[in-house]
Length: 285
Image (cartoon, rainbow, N blue to C red; front, top):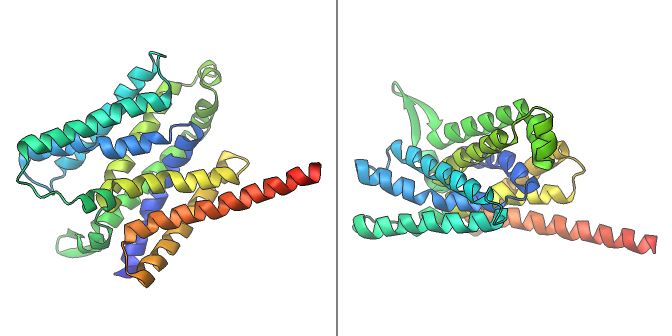
């Protein structure tokens, strides 16, 4: 059971790191936070339609809400009246509040565990099995996050050069024959799918931590994007092992421990990085 839990955490981390690297490079780190909150109205609407909490349609609803968030954010950004962070900050509170209002109006009798929303049900994920013709193939969450990790990895590999160029210079990418806007939407769709699937496993708070903290940590000590990707994976995996150790020894939330370990790794690298910069500055002077 512990091995399955660690495997789920590892695959979730890998799936989140891949789009997270490009979000950090593009200066759109807030988008992961926006998507993790903006999923709520899609989930609530689908629940009101079929009255089933475990239905696959809830994932479809969440994905539609995520894509609507991306489209509306892009529409505001393209007016050139607001910057990226402002546009994102305008959209996701709107979607999240719509979800809260819908719950208040039509689903007051439904018990909503806020701990599950924030931290997911990571500890219980291994108990939800993937059964095919009576054969147990392991936890559903492991298969789902493994599929997302593979899709993200393969998709990034296929369009890596185009996505890299569009991330640094939209104009050059356009004159080179690429479609920067299409690539951007592909990245946002990848981020939306990852947020939707990871939200069910680790919750809204930990999705943001896994998607951004390893990427931000790698940004401090990488000279190119390929190195940044590998460093981010290393820091993410290190956070998983550190989080598992913390959760086991202190008997606390596994998801919360994972986010805490990610933050601890970042702080260590951050301090080492700036101590190194100070030494170089002293040597020059």
